[in-house]
Image: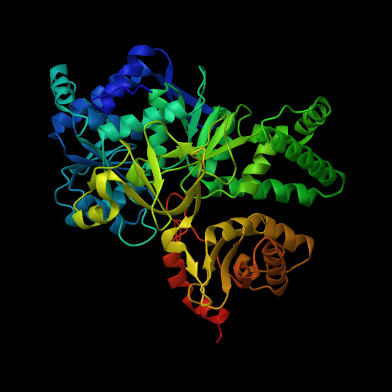
Amino acid sequence: MQFVDFSSAHGMLKSTVDSYPDRTAYSWFVEPGVTESVNWREFYDQVIEVAKSLIALGIKKDDKVNIISYSCYRWALSDLGITTAGGCTVGIYQSNLPKDCQYIIDHCDAVAIFAEDQVQLDKLFEIKSEIPDVKKVILLNGDHDDDWVLSYEDFIKLGKSLPDEEVESRVADTKSTDTAAIVYTSGTTGVPKGSVLTHDNITFTAQSVKLSGEFQDGDKTFLFLPLAHIFAKSVMYSSIIAAVPLTFARKIETVVEDIAVAKPNWFASVPRIYEKIYSKILGGAESKGGLALKIFRWAVNVGEKVSDIKLSKKPVPLPLKIKYAVATKLVFSKVQNALGGNVRWCISGAAPLNPSIAKFFHAAGILILEGIGMTENTSFTNINRYDNYRFGWVGQTGPGIEQKIADDGEVMFRGRNVMKEYYKNPEATERTFAEDGWLYTGDIGEIDDEGFLKITDRKKHIIITAGGKNIAPSVIEGVMTTSKYIGQVCIIGDRRKYLSALVTLEKENIEDYAKKNNIQYNDYDELNVNPEIVDLITKEVQSRNKEFASFETIKKISIVPEWTIENSCMTPSMKIKKNVIIEEYDEKIGEMYPE
């Protein structure tokens, strides 16, 4: 398997520009339903403009530059401009509070910041006195009359008179071992750590992803995940090496509307999005009832039979093909059209996806390929292949990546995708690496004879009951969320006699249930304690308990408000922060263990 040894991310970009100068590179929405785009040559010219302006601003080789913005065209442009100028990109989630922004800005030694808009600028003004090393803030959208702030248009003017040789010198001086990015972990526990990723980490991983995927000429992709997260950033870099046009969503709230316009052939998401779509489809079908519900259930039954045959890699018999065509026309086409109508496959990563949800989408004609990665290995080690996949497994390793299981069951990886170190944290770096460059992941898993990896759970999340039973909570949590009424689940039970769970409700479906059953309420939160709703959720949990051994069943539940990024109970990649939740609801947990 041949990899190109690019000296930098710029070199990888230049390779694509030289091969496909007139092919569309990026598109973005200027208003609902209307996009603008640039080709690879236009994008490259603008990257050079950004690099020139950064050099004119005084950015030196290896300087750290933050980007605090939702994913957008200018995020990609700024990122490539920073690395082309020899700098290092450090993304910050646009949802971060000022104090969280301050920690990263200060810890990474940033000297300049690209800020999305006035909302982000206000955060920076709030902490300005605490970040004295930041010379300038470049406002991606809008204007401001403070000397500390440059509008994007004025920023670009800075480099107009700078000769091309200045950028060429920076590019020539950049080595594959230089730092291209510091990506801070999303902090499910403790203070975020900054993973130092080199140019080689990024360009190698992009190539390994390309070699693992099923890309076709004319493909398009769509991005709504935050580029401050390495998962989204790896998708962006993989689309560069594969020369795949990428459309940016306007914001997370407009994804459904925007994807219908973008019509991607593939895209990446986190499980929470697939869970919400699944719940909405299920709830919508059941709310219609009657003949519509019967047709829906018949279609799903047909689709599952087709899914089973495809999984066994056998041809689908003609009579079943005909039934499936009817099921697609009546039911599944609506699901497919909701995702733009052209999707061949999707990627799911960042957290476990329940196999039954993957199976449902497969039955509906949408293949979700689950993979795995972490910030420390550039968000890619394993993925199921388009022609070789299993639900509930995260697939085989990408080319050039090694995997093994430690004596205690922990999954370990080695390869050019593995980070250099944690920034300014040698103690954590030492704890994360074994001898010969093997990276500890914190995941417990198993590898079969074909190299497929299955993750059981996070090592730190394994529950050991008072009776000494080891339980992987993520599997149980995933099964519980297949209920259309259950949104999120956090299982409790470490060192206790039995399992209990904190549960959130799936708002739209619960409201529909309340309406149909004439349940009166003035405020939505009242439903969390309504006896009929509590009884409903208890029965939903009990019915799913049947899939597990007695010691794995949930004995008690407590319904709580939804966990969100805004209330600090979820990371920006939509993983729940169990330590925060357990601390927040300590009293409710105590009520479930009265002894």
